[in-house]
Length: 443
Image 1 (spheres, rainbow, N blue to C red):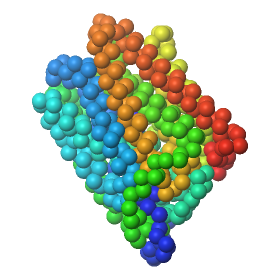
Image 2: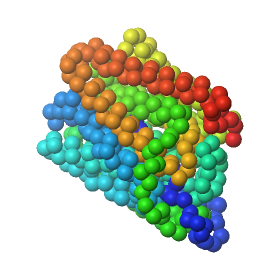
Image 3: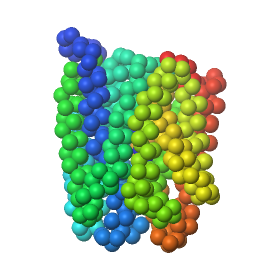
Image 4: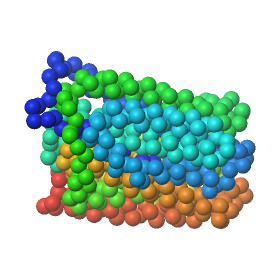
């Protein structure tokens, strides 16, 4: 669940001279960015496979379990706009190191876990780090692959290999989510020792993420076109004047994250156990294939979007699969692997296209602010949806022997996904008309 191309524009004197450019440096930067976010993705998704142990051995209610992922989003409601401005002011790479450090401290407190308020505080600090870290790395990768690093471009001219590069970033990051879901299998000895050891492992991977972000900062110092000095001041006017297409794509971003992540990263595993009768390893494996499919499909779709265009059409397809998935889960006895495939395709399509498409709708100098605004509303939606889903599950006594108690949660998430689809169809219609920004064009 849950993503600014510029860390500043070169000053009037032009980019700082840095000598011959090595063509492998962008790919090294991409690899370090992916390793940095991969550990944090693991830590975010570590709650779902641990949910049953947290419930049985740590005595947490479903509302409290939902709160652990809801509170993760809470700090980003006020801080994401500031984070976007920090990226534009201080640089994506430097801000990434700071936010990765927050993520590590938060994951460590979450693993300590007692009393519950300390665990919740850990998720709060982890949220401050992880969400802004993703924006930083998206910004940094886009700077390397937008075709003209550090050079001002107009909306609709993102070009380059941005979609492929961002897709590869998400693809490698999904390895973290996949490993978290199947951790009851490959780290079964940790789960056998209780609820805490799996979270300690997640904290260790966040430490690895911090090291990778430091490496990304070192490599980024050799980026062509990197400004010699950052802009002189924050520009609050960056938050005004976005085009209508931007607001449509923002709607999809917020509603997609508010339905996908509360289900797959918080309640899916325990839902499969209680409502569908699967064991913990079976439920984790079923859930993991959503992320496993995205590892391979996301870069393919990104490359296709770069080559053939039709970005709004791709987004409409991805958005349409979510309400179908929730309908099948709540109203039918369809094979669970069908729903996994549908959600996996949706999760491959939307992230592969939505971030580079957003870069085509916003001036490069305002992209940090745009991504920050998206993150504010996305975090608000994820907080509300996680909390509401957990509260509904408790109110209707969802649990072993009462799988039907999860139906209100599925109705809530399915309804939100329908609204997200409507926003996407509005974007597609606008982009096919005279006010389009080239989202449907190839290249």
